[in-house]
Image (cartoon, rainbow, N blue to C red; front, top):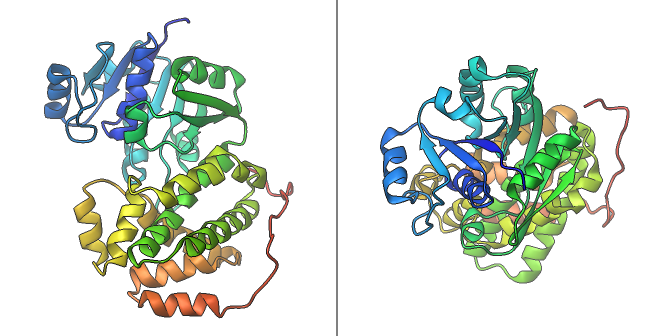
Amino acid sequence: MNQQVITVLGGGSFGTVLANIAAENGNKVYQWMRSSDQAERMAVNRENERYLPGCKLHPGLIPVTDFADALAESSLVLVAIPSSHFRQVVSQIKPYLTAQHALVSTTKGVEAGTFKLMSEVIGDEAPQCRVGVISGPNLAKEVATRQLTATVIASESEELCAKVQSAFHCDYFRVYAGSDVYGVELGGALKNIYAIAAGMCAAMGMGENTRSMLMTRSLAEMSRFAVRMGADPMTFLGLAGVGDLIVTCMSPLSRNYRVGFALGQGRDLEGAVSELGEVAEGVNTIKYVKAKADELGVYMPLVGGLFEVVFNKLPVQDVVRKLMLSQQGEDVEFEVLDKSIPR
């Protein structure tokens, strides 16, 4: 395996997990973070105590707080920054980027105001760089304990896909390649919405039949919206679609699931998010997708119902009753790709 020099931007759980895997694979890895205290503690204790306590970090992972140090040697850059700060950070690193750099987003969210996914933000800020996205059923705490899983690297550049596969593939983390960047990324963003709904259902004691119905209808909504936005619906049958949807709708390790669970217990949104202590991308994504679906005329009753519960504080039981009494259509609504929509 050829050694690569890799930079991971972000000091959260998934960024740390990926940085550690790359280091274990023999690569030199710089992990940039805003907090100098966090960087110093990681360098000394070899542990991300805030986000991944108990996970020892490989000596080849180098925590830094300076962009110049982080980017001087690397050609592969992973951006693991919450969507609310994503553009700001990519804009800050522009002076250090060249056409030799490849930027890969790991963020599963949507930018406020523009409805741009993170690959599109990278395209705006660093058009000279190759772009890719990583997404899949990858709960960071399980990956950190070497539980078997897989992910998808999607890019129009086959060379970039190969670089990412070489850097991160190992005996417990399998990396598949694809070219539907927008579909892979959209799946990662949309599933966060339905994970909140699943957490609410669990807190209210709803059964397995209900959860099964929720996930199945969620996949139908995701596909319907994806086609209208120009993504390939077949992507949603893979790891970045149904795979990620299943794990986030079933696991208490999912941040969005935990927010939903707290809401289902009767807590308000502010309290649920504050108690989590981490970013749950699905909360804001509900608003953005609801607005876009209304604009495009896409039928998304689950998103609409969840919006009423989370932001208008309607009783969950009233929304559920309305959903169950709504018009019934066909069971299988998996639409085909509309190739007239450019992406």
